Amino acid sequence: MNTVQRIAKNTGVLLASQVVSYILGFFFIMYTARYLGAEGFGVLSFAIAFTGIFGVFADLGLQPLTVREVAKDKSLAGKYLGNIAVMKMILVIVTFGLIAFFINLLGYPEQTIKVVYLVALSIVFGTFSGMFNSVFQAYEKMEYASVGHILRSALMLSGALLAISQGFNVVGFASIYFLVNAVVLVYVFAVCAWKFVLPKIEVDWGFWKPTIKEALPFGLSGTFITIYVWIDSVMLSLMKGDVVVGWYNAAYMLVLVLLFIPTAFNSAVFPLMSQFYVSSMDSLKFMFEKHFKYMLTLGIPIGVGITLLANKIILLIFGAEYIPSAIALQILIWAIVLIFARTAFERVLEASNRQIIVTEVFGGCALLNVILNVILIPKYSYIGAAVATLITDFTVFVILFIWSLKIGYNIPTKQIVETISKVIAASLLMGVFIEYFRDQNLFILVFIATIIYFGLILLIRGIDKDDIRLFKNLFPKKELGYK
Image (cartoon, rainbow, N blue to C red; front, side):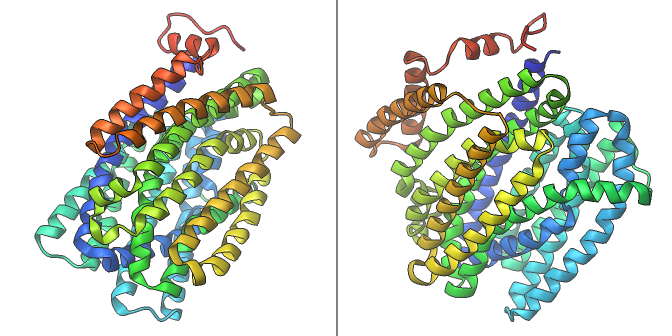
């Protein structure tokens, strides 16, 4: 199986599983938000945001480091799992202690504290699951991780339906996270032990020091990303209350769902980019350029479509109580478009052992996001939080783009201008269609708009000869010629 086939296989498997998972997750969010109402959904969203900020300390970058190093040398899998398991045991105890300390210090109601504790326990299970998923990713066997994603989403939806039928309150919904993540952990452990390596507890102090040193930039980067992803919900809770958090997160959860596209592609290409950094710089640059192009080609039309259809989407999914969420959705979707576009720069820097750059960028922008939220939330509430997120993501994109130029991973200006102009042209024409027929059935409208967009992209040759060659070689009998 050649390089393109492996990318296609892993991306395809991940996309298929993510589509199924997010369809199930979509219904989970919809039923949960409608049943709990804006206030109850706000409490649950706050708990996810609050524990998410602290939860990153339970990994500290060990997962992406494991992917990178085991992808280069599969014999290291047992060594990494055995030692990292012990590291994580220590980290999760510290993490849960921090969560308990701060949630009580802030003086939240007893019900909110219970919800936070349950979600925090689910994060503990989740971080150990991530350890095993990193092995699947390093071996480029993403089908096992994909089954885990689907299992988790199916159990979450089933749990929500059970909770609704039994009349559970928000604490009952928080219990779903805890129980489901425990089941998924059992699954990934069993698969790892059966198909790859049986983890054996190991404490190698000589291994720990360099591993933590290498992982820390990944961990700090993840910490900073998590802060600016979730800090707005925490600050909204402190400043504006649970109802506003519910409105904001109705929009936020919808746009976060779309990240399954770059996430799936990143998971498939990152191990290969790490290998190419050692074996073939031309292949690394080729993959980097295509990564950027494909994410941009998918991201911009999604932004245009959701901007025009935000009111219909919110009303259909969440109901009239959440109509204030529409304007937040229109703003936040462009933050997601920027995330689509920047992921190529993140991956190429990390694959090139320059993760410290990504860490520094996200550190500065996390601080920027906090400052913007402090300024904007008191006056503009959840709309201010959405604007703060958009400005932050734009800043991250610009800085990572500049850094990629500095270290030699530049995309020719002519190529960028050509790609962007064609994507924007096709997206705007698609937008004209959506605007003209906006009163039609939403599902039919989206389906036809998608066909129109990709038809236009093909017509104006937004897909070039290299792309056609790649698509034709997804399942070839011989290796691709590029090196």
